[in-house]
Image (cartoon, rainbow, N blue to C red; front, side, top):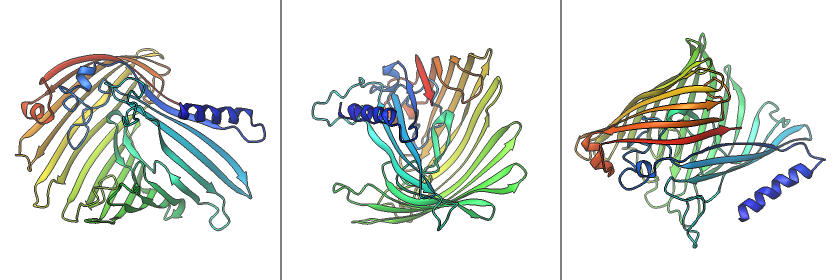
Length: 402
């Protein structure tokens, strides 16, 4: 109630204020009734969830039973020749098994609790570096993802960490950003960490192709705190009327593959690498997005590895401006040498008649009815506590961003 009152008060003040410029409002929401027994009870939580061990890969369409929303207010102003902006974004999550209210009278149930996801101030036009953008606060920093699978390959920092940085420094035809993040530093945190992120984007390397290179260095304090480092190379290529993105990534120690924090006590003997490629066809009646991924992560300090492979994608065809038929298929397999070298495989297939406002891939809102078929081998079922190896589920979902 306190959150809602504060939020509405802020919105009301933005409307009543005539001296200030308009407050921008934006956000993202997905919500819908799904089969709880498929997604979130003991027989199917991880067995049929959208994250296969170590990686996603089976896709999100017809595979999200939760409610999620993020809502942002931002205010831009000019003062002293500087253009600045303040942004506040809250987010909200409710799993498919939890009602849309916090039923824990002690407040201990984190489900359904609004949180501050982003809160920062940025400014551009300072006379010391007029073309650079300076910022301080908590923010999503230069994220790169594959939408159909909800996989984030570059994160920077950590959701919940606070930082400061500067972006937009011209270097070699590209744009350089440098940031420093601090992991949560509450009294209950044994190991607080610091991460330095160096990100160079927009380097032209071939016709229609641009390179992004990201370096990260991490250091954790406290008992057992370790250092880490990582490198991510991302190549974007315009091709066949769409865009292809290739990632090659390596990290060790307390830096993860997404160039954010890994475990505080992960030492340099823990090494990781992955390669992933995604193609997206975004415009026209026929749209699609694909992903192929392979990665290896050291599961212990003795060289035993966890290996992941996934392959899949989403295809949609718009029969009219406001109706499309979407299909999605995903396959993921893992092999963990630490637990016995058994392949754990899962496959998901979804079909979804959809009402939409346009034919393009990112046109939203969409209102969907979906039918999903899950299939897994016995190793996956046992490792993830699923009740069955095969199941069909159906549900509805709305998705919107604005």
